[in-house]
Image (cartoon, rainbow, N blue to C red; front, side, top):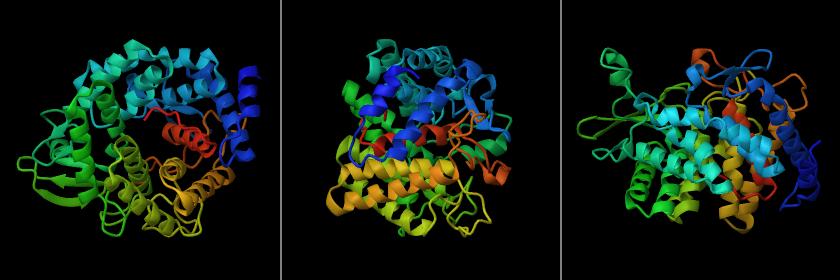
Length: 394
């Protein structure tokens, strides 16, 4: 084993340290190292039935940044340059995204926060900083003034009218996790547009995607011309009036990030509201069912990725609050992590290429039980936050 990795794990003693979490994190780093000869420059997209990876087609997919993020976390934990070199070797793929407008949608924050912002924060790489700022300008350009939201998806071209009707005038919960790129760009440049758009989108999300009871819609539609609010809907959840668990987790982590970036108490209150409702919806279960409108009785798929994002968001929320409230969110986060370790951990399976089983990518499309690169990234982030780490790329 690399001595720098051993040194890290032997010396780590952050707040609320848990030996099981430290051991799991060590296994995550070593699994990431072990798969590098197989992944090469490819980016994992989804797991197969035998727990190997399928990769992003043509080098691009909205998930392509998560393995980079996993590499940067492994670099941070171990100090081994093999991880930073593997992440940086993907630079051309991310440059291609910035050169192809059809690859630029609301998920550009996932890509560049976990690739370019990470390199800048960790190694002060100026090329990475310029790339990250360019990506932030691309995200900024998706803002729709008439409805005060960032447009989510793209039409597929002038001949696909059905997709154009579906995509136009639509925002989704996932974008909350992408706002961190705009907050970072504002902090770097002082350009007010970055901050204003992030705040306006967060406000529109809180108004239209978060229901009064703290549950959430996956998407919300506006009149594309006037910005008039129309209706909340789902795309990946069970029903329009249900609560898709990964969407709920995006909101929890995303609003906590917004508060960390701005100190705006509205975002802290929204994160608390979503966290409180999530705790009630999970009941006695430790890994979320893929949609909270469905009974958590074992008859429906769970989503380990929702569990991982939820856990990471809860630890972040705990770090932003105090006293009994902070202890509450920390306990809930640890409960989610222990559930993942008990029911979904693949790091003890020698043949598995990923970290977590039982991810629900898109249940209504038949993708309900597989490894997911975003589940793996947030699993590592949550394990680190549980041990007191605070240096991340959001």
